[in-house]
Amino acid sequence: MKLPFPFASCFSPSSKRTSSVNYDDSFSSGGQKIDESISVFSYNELKAATQGFKSSNRVGEGGFGAVYQGVLQDGSLVAIKNLSVEQESLRGEREFLTEIAALSGIKHENLVSLRGCCVDGAKRLLVYDYMENNSLAYTFLGEDYKREKFSWELRRQIIVGVAEGLVYLHEQLKPRIVHRDIKSSNILLDHDFNPKLGDFGLAKLFRDEASYISTRVAGTLGYLSPEYAISGHLTRKADVYSFGVLLLEIVTGGPVVGFDLERGEYFLVNKVWEMYNEKQLLQAVDPVLNGNFPEEEALRFLKVGLLCVQETTRLRPKMAVALKMLSNEIDVEDTEVTKPGIVSDLMEVKIGRKQSSQSFFSGDSANNSSGR
Image: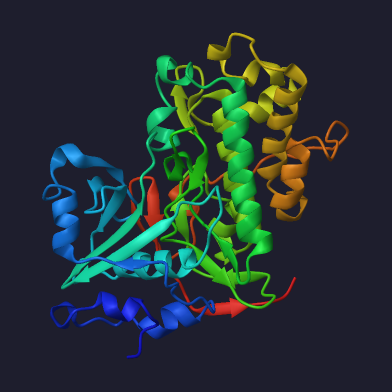
């Protein structure tokens, strides 16, 4: 098999292993080539950088593996994802290939930068720029004292930054990229809390003018768009839905899937929808802000979030339109909002899935379709 440079050089003679993954197909399906800016590291280099993958250097979990803080020989601080690639499963292998294909040659201030890769035997590692403030889920969610550090201005910066990153993926790239797993744990924060969209292991590349891709379902319960979960037809509107959930999560400070004595288990999108119908939408804003936010802008952001999670896919705005709504370039005051869609049970997910906890993955078909 001929592998695109420099990915081919990632493989040493000892790294060859039996696998049904077709490397050429994995990359050429989207027309992406590996960029020369992606460095190739040896396993020993990355092991030394993390002090032998020391537990104290472990900073989080990626889609299919642990993430470690490391220091390269040139002194630069990096994040190293050590993927779990089991002989009986190709999931980690697929993420490795997809991540490189998606991020090859892509530079945007709101997307994580891939520095390099390593293959040694069954080991697969990816190297990224280090994000000093970890993920949004780690730094922001949960206890009040965490959220108190996030002013309205900072929340706006994060929401708008994520939106700009998605506009770039959806509208400005060729082929277009659908991320498929937009959620708080995949929003990384740099030293200045600028958001970087990360973990492209489930991303799909849209060739030509295909309006959707037929695929089995991957994503996270609570962020997963209902039409994709049920039909397996992936469009950019699936990312729009997930972004809407994330927006509501950041503005309200509440869990995507929560529990209280009155409601039992509830979904954030339904909770905000009820407040909207009761004309109490302002009460959805995170109470730790203590009213220190512009009411008109907060209401606009919440309404944009609800527009993004509407059950009817065609009614959701494209990301470019959503961004203009957030910046008030497009007025949403008189825009009608219809009820949100949710996947309340994994049994609703397209048949053929495999699942683990709230995140699940069921593989992909290679069937590209165009149409509506």
